[in-house]
Image (cartoon, rainbow, N blue to C red; front, top):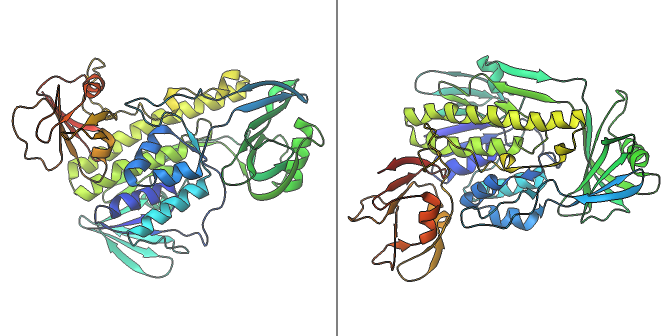
Length: 462
């Protein structure tokens, strides 16, 4: 099997890694002439950190990232309070990474490219997708280099202006609100403590101002502010004028502007995520406002859901990709759009983040049975003790491209190649023991749970 991925952002790179580790021949092409340099999607949600652990990049992500900082609120030049968008939560047995991590998108992409290269796959820059055709057995694509490629599947991870989506004629329903514009940029700021974020505003309108969020790996901040002047250019001089207006002259001296853009809300959802042997993922399928930090993370989840299904070649599994991911994308768009509206309405709650932005509550369950674990639920982590008394975790046993059969107090051997037997009391043979696992799964003796390669329950056998 071979797969062509158009687009080398976080979505395309995640999918490339997931396919390559399964031994699938994959190419990742991108029309850009150089790699993106900028923070843009700089918030990694807890579920994304769990995915990155499975893909083998979490250690590097944690080493380069920083926790979401406390924000100093300064109104009319006077410090008012220190606040966080979300409280710092201690890890638990079932959720080892409960807090979002801040890491500029370009750094996340570099980490993912390095992992992809370990499988012998290099991103092909200056290589766009021009045209393609498909039949029941294959996709034939023509690249901007003039090369013709024949593959089993094509995945469009090529952003909101997706060539793949447009070629398929798939409607991209939603709105672009030209009345809202934000200036974003990565810039250093002498005079500000890089251990904190800042919200500078005026008392006449405290919900409109300049936000400065520290970026990891240097002294830069991500600068953001709403614009009411259509003529402004995203230059260093413009950013300095705005920070002087809201923070006061001399509070922060800006320098080293390395990336800037003017952003408009573009909130859209593709009508379909699949057409035959062609799939859409990430921004090609859904675009989000930056509020809530959902866009990049949702794209990573798309790729993580699609990779093992492509590798299987199973039509029933491939059909479930759109069902599962489009439903989730629609829900997440509602969350991020709701937060954006709070900003527009001047609601102070816009600065607060709840569990619904962490993506830990994603579920593909078919039945609404809140009392018990069921098919489609996320498989949580849990500490275990093996037969030799060694401490381990369910996530360590789930790690890799395989599915796992999790059995509770079984009374017979298993033929499944990746079986974890959880028993009460002292373990014997190759079994594992953990009372906490029983608590998290609400499982009875004899229950068997088939954990999918993407960490969700594929079957519950009782």
